[in-house]
Image 1 (spheres, rainbow, N blue to C red):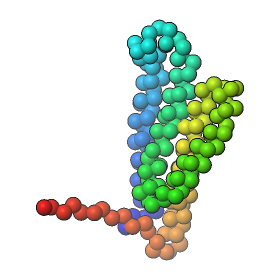
Image 2 (image 1 turned 135 degrees about the vertical axis):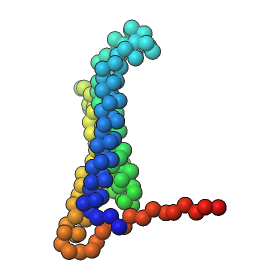
Image 3 (image 1 turned 60 degrees about the horizontal axis):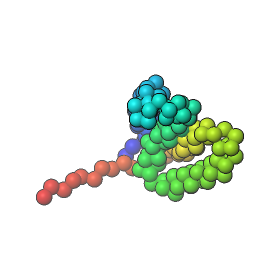
Image 4 (image 1 turned 60 degrees about the vertical axis):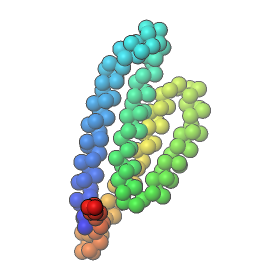
Length: 152
């Protein structure tokens, strides 16, 4: 059995590890991405991509941050919530993309990535409910069990 507090610490550690990996990758792309594009597409391609590199990297980084939250929610059995956040958020962004693309270009990519982070709001609310139940004297803890491998 794992308590709400232990679950919260584990989720925070997973998020921080995910954040560190994404920050390093996005940082490298933001600092040296123009040079990589120049090697790959030449000077003309590099100049054409210079304006859109930053919003694409930031939007993709935000999408990447949602990965640990999405997997955590799935591990807790919250598949329907993950699906609702994913489909609902993407549907809302799809409606806004037409407007945003005409007025801001690929800047909307940042918003698209930010919508994916809604999984953490649901996770925080869920772990808060578990903490309140365990603090009030209830023995309601989230069961956590590893299956043992059978040896043949």
